Image (tube, rainbow, N blue to C red; front, side, top):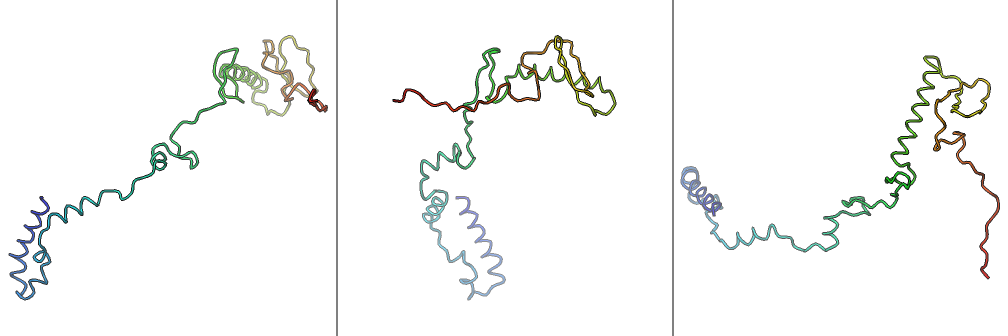
Length: 183
């Protein structure tokens, strides 16, 4: 409504000031496109309504993809479920498979830091150019020549293996196991 009123005011202003003073009467029809137009309310309303309306409805798949994202494209907005979480039977806390439980990890870190502190005290500001062996209370392990020994005042914790260089304490067998009783 207000747009139509503003357009009429502009048309009246143009006719009174610009067209009458500066243009000849024979060019009035060519010079004023607003004067030639007759206002048609129904056409303006129908055009403005159709501008903001979608032509086709989105499919359910597209709507759900926009709402939740797609795991295939890496745009998923849902938090994926972690099936690798387990409970430590000793401490009762949760941990991810392949990682230590938080309290166990903290105990290992504390022991490692105490060993590192002893090594730092042993070497001081000298270069660390010799191998280091760790000996706990109650151990009689012998080290090679040129090895500096760090003696701890506590017993070896159960989670610390005897030889920190080796990965496993067992050797793989070469025998092949075959199922029995298959008939």
